[in-house]
Length: 293
Image (cartoon, rainbow, N blue to C red; front, side, top):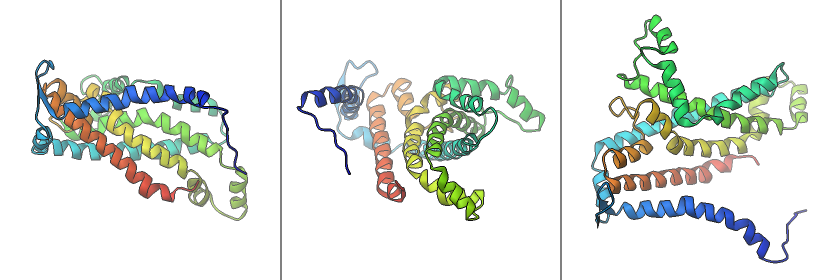
């Protein structure tokens, strides 16, 4: 039997919806509209003189090889961060869901990184892996590894991937743990009685029941990688060395602030928004159908 909430009039529903609509309009639609309008303009760094140029900013953007290089860096970075953060957080949630001693302390420690700002998280990892004073870098050098993320692009990418993954694990862990605790124990016990081993129980019962949580976190993690990792990259590598860690969101900021080309930066932000919306639509179109609700 379907339950519905019926309101006597339109006043209460409007009062409940208006705050969220105002937040969405003020903090999403208005900035997005302004970025789209600026992407068709050529203006100086101070915004005192503007000229309408149509799609010239987009045409100029796709002529630059460094922009396509940033796309490749973003693709590698997003796959590594999303894959590692989802898999590690799922592993930690499965371990935390067991009846172990000190589980409360274990869960609390895993949640703490979520409260750390991205820039602070980047600085923490930078201190640990700093070539001259970092504890981890000294350990790596003692093993014969010439560690230097300021000169080696692979090392720099490895460092920002670690920092971004560590920052996101807590968020994923919370949802995976809640999903695991919502699975009826009777199903797992019945499969155990039937002779299914732990690994088989996980892949045939637990993981399919976690698919709604996994799908939600996949969408959230893709958005996180494309937008919220800017603070980590800016604090750790500033997009370097060279452009080895310059992602699309960092390039939007760098071209607008350092380069002073606000029109080109706005065009990049519009393209980035279209990419994220397109990826989200693809996930809802092709991945959601495999989710078991």
